[in-house]
Image 1 (tube, rainbow, N blue to C red):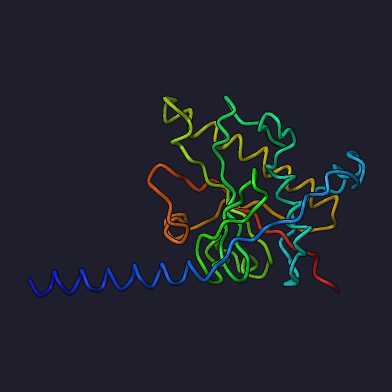
Image 2: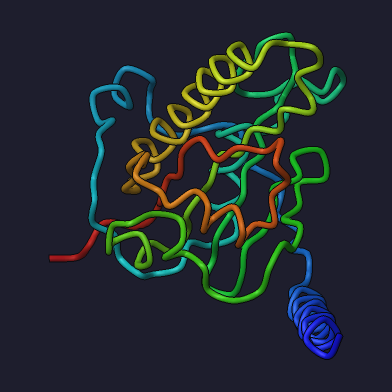
Length: 216
């Protein structure tokens, strides 16, 4: 009986600690994305590449806003449709954004970063050492609860496909903005799922660090 009570006390303390930590992280309003300008498409395609080196220099909030809008923002606000396609318009992919001060969830409709967990968790977004150096690391998480009665095979297939569209948008934006990026599949998903507080019907597909090139 004492052991059970002890475990309950520990769980309560951990829960209180987590709430206190998450409450310290405030929502981040993003500036309106700049949806014009940039390099011509053919030039961007010629510059698109994977780079695994990042400067630790922070990205300005305007760049983060433009990056997330390019990835999966609203480009037709009247209909709620977005810059990347999704099967059946499920819009099942959420973008989690890891910054040095905490992890946020991108709310495209409000153009807002919603707090998820405080603290620097960038190292949990990939096994490679460069991940914790990049100032921004994205995680693409499929929410299967939005995919109706689709079979599990279809959920896995379409969420992976839809993530591919989004991550390519990020590649193209980075090529236009002079940023480095690389998409990562080598992720400790159980650990990251715990950090993000995911449900069993949510699945991490890929992660993608973004940052300035290293000055040489």
